[in-house]
Image (tube, rainbow, N blue to C red; front, side, top):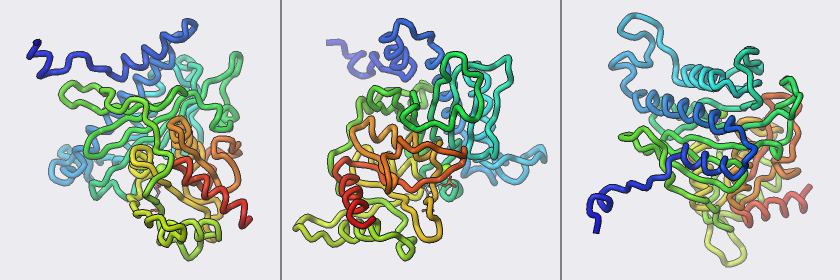
Length: 338
Ligand code: AHM
Ligand code: MG
């Protein structure tokens, strides 16, 4: 028996190796997506390291008001945006970038242009940044058609047109969840290797879950289907047990739990925010893509979320996503009450 190999696994599937394996299924592939994903991974590692040091900010001047040289330090969300814009631009594979942090789309300088458009939220969960609760980066990738020059119109496409989507969660560990359209895989950063290792192969979301996840403080302004759904989750009339409520307030963490444990995550419309809160391009679409790829559903209250066609880059939409059966119940309620 090989005790050394037993003590330390030597057949690790790194994210890069996994993406290269996927690429090899397509002999015509040029490797551009692999290179782009590697740059996204680099951005995630960078932000992970900055997030890990966030609590020390005031003490050692890493991200406080001023650092030891007296220079103004950047806030984590601003820093994360810069990191991703630079990582994506320098990959030489991007064309148009849309970030939650920037009002306008970024057009990549001509000499660095490639055939992918990336929409992303560099650090989502802003209310949780300063108290050490899990936060994350969300991204979605579109590919330009042959001959397309690259304009904002190229990202105003339905989520079904995305070629890949994912998120990186900066939590008790750093976890990257990715789909290139052939299922969903989860990777955990091994800090000693500096590599993401495949730890959650082919994630399948349970068909029905026992958890609902929503900001119930908004209940007074909800519409009838949402109110009825949450009422039923708490006071089931069919003899089943009530669901548990879990709400972190970081979409990445709430969706990650939903993918692994099942259940439903909802950010519905309400009287004050008729389009909900979450943004279509870089929150709703990538998460809906992942949930569908894992066997669940994502619904806006009117239609399949991925079929929405955004008209503005920062457009918002209500969203109900998670286990297939749980979202089906929401769809039934909307059909009944609308
Ligand atoms: P942000 O982009 O400003 O961080 O807002 C998005 C976040 C999501 O991560 C989360 O699902 C939601 O806002 C929570 O909102 P609320 O505090 O209204 O419950
Ligand atoms: Mg956000």
